[in-house]
Image (cartoon, rainbow, N blue to C red; front, side, top):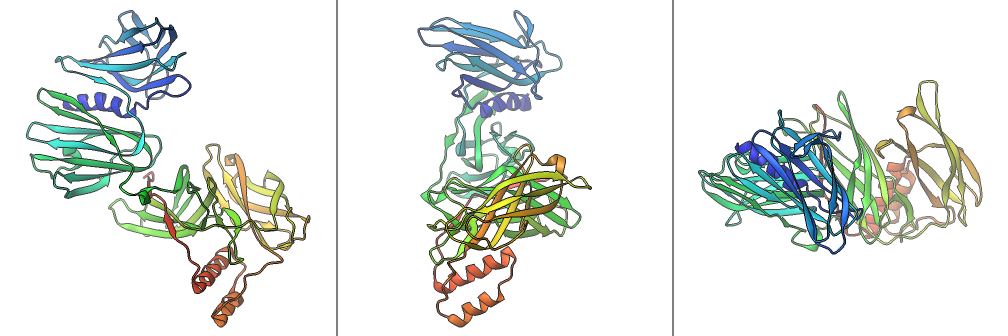
Length: 498
């Protein structure tokens, strides 16, 4: 009974994200059978009638037929008179227990709803939707016959970190909420089994992406909900201005190597430069088995010193990363943390643009990229480079092809060149290609400042490779004392299939 209450009641609480502008809202969990019934109350508080439907779905998203007083159905038409309510209740006759979610579609944004779960022993609880946020805290208590249930529902695969504090502010432990899908419901005694029988405190839940959370006090005759309080951080610096786009991330393990690809979005109000992503790989036993840092490929911009870099992200822009690293053991999860420097940048005078491209299939079935680039700027450019980002149908990053083969790396104003690049990605997987270019204005070069000898050695030692040139530029700015404030994005954790 204890587990049944938590599963059905808390699961519903946490996933109720409320109304959307298109007059649709959801009850993301309901149940019928096993001593449980669910009553839906849909209310129209306004002077005009409203109409729509209440639909039931199973966990796979297929229509689910449930027993009602009027018969079995998967869709209930709603005709709600002015200032009235429509009540729809399941009968509890499902065997096995029917589990799924419900969707309400109405022609009025003023219509609202709630659900009431009723159990055979007479216990019941009413449920309202909970808003979404990136942080929540809630009061928790554990006693000899009392426990606190916690449930979360997330919009993405971002991990949800939980930290428990006692009433005196002492941190009792930190961990990630155990979950393999989009929802999880656990008791406090399960999350922190070493707690004493008498405990009071609060639980802080945070994530890099939106989620919802709610609590439940359960024990004996006690069954009541615990509202969660939105938490946005204690300081302005807690705001995460760089964000990993989790839906874009793809991982691949191949014996002793790990590949991670994805995208980073700049939510700051100014430019970021030298934007990077740190990746830490963890084994199933919690030990670190690998890690690496890589620069993103973003927008090519001119820094104040006359140095050019395509590791820049302007406000609202996204860049892409590709990381290949050795690992000491199979990887169970990876932590991704974006970071960069904040600096105002300038537009280059040259402009390297892709004016046409084709995605062909070579004799091995791999994707092959061909096309044309053009200098559409007002000065000639040099050190031209082109990176191609291969995307799948869900906008996931399949690969970042750094340094596509260009016909020429020096281009006059208006000049058109070609590119040709073979990949190791199956053509059938590629849905779209994005491009990021880099170049230096031909009429501009970084002026050398003291110490001259050191900077001259760096310039002499530069290689053609993109990473070496970036490191050299970084060192030049360190010598000049031009390093800028650092901005660090939120760490996200991704579990890998075992």
